Length: 233
Image (cartoon, rainbow, N blue to C red; front, side, top):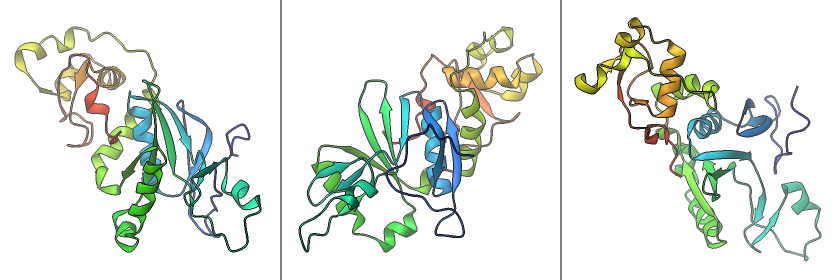
């Protein structure tokens, strides 16, 4: 059952059998259980949850009439307004809006490259939104390798969890450079601790290189979490 407390999306998403397949996703940065129209959109939400720059995610937060420049809470609200005879609004509803730690807000649109090739006029939408004073970024499926998706989904449940001490199992990293995760795990580090230290930046690795596992190369971090900043924000 969907969360009745969650904000209503600005446009209606139809379930499979009507128009589109629906994916359900939730998390600590997004209110309630949300519907996404594609795996790409779901991956964007997961990446935003892992990204430490992001503190809030809103799905389909508003609808634009790009012709007039007006903003509406939903597509239905826009349609409910009486328009002058012959006027046709230029309607656009972004997939997400993310709020960053510095308070800035960015609209995020997920589109497959095949769709963009068939709809080259979509560039006009991005330009029009920017002209209205909004920051907007376009994300395609090319951002997400299968390894990156798997790793982000492994890390997402632990975002916001308390970090653990590194312990003696990583003391050799300073001198020895990158080591395989198997060495840390065999030295007493738990998988949970490994994931938490990756999230905190005390350890780091290339999340897109390969699925997290015993052969993953990890190195001592300095607290920087840039390896978690997947989205072009």
